[in-house]
Image (cartoon, rainbow, N blue to C red):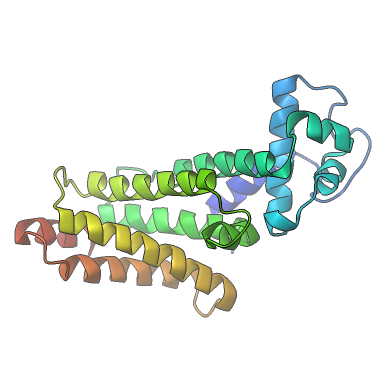
Length: 231
């Protein structure tokens, strides 16, 4: 089953009525304003990066997918590193939108929705996801690490905000940082193995959060409050 968040993401990276990976006259306006053209190339890159590791993608492939000349791609992005960075920024911004669940449901369900959105994001951009988290990858740079850290920080703040903890202890903050790393690693492993369903994975990750918080050694009142809200 394809989740609603996956449907929305696919709609954003694919032009309406245009089959991905095909070319054809009239698919796009031949002339676009500069900001529209740049956005179109970024969307094209995201579509290609969803199929292949970004480090393997060439400007020629982006040009073919976008139905433009290679020279036009270089006009907006002098090298692939610039295009990868811009595409990542766009993808991370979209992910953060997905990680903002409705506040009118219990905190546990909010976290479950956010985890599901994160897993869907990883599935949609599987080759890119693995490359970005591999420190030795040519795709992983200081700029990409900053974007990834932005998402990690937002996830930690989301948990604290939705569970009503305004002044977290150092032990709780450290626990949340470790849990986010567990999520990233577990999802990368799951993408390879697919040995449980998406919902089972999200449930397991929630169980890990509760277990890690309960054993973190932070103030008892803080731990009881958070565990009660997410279990």
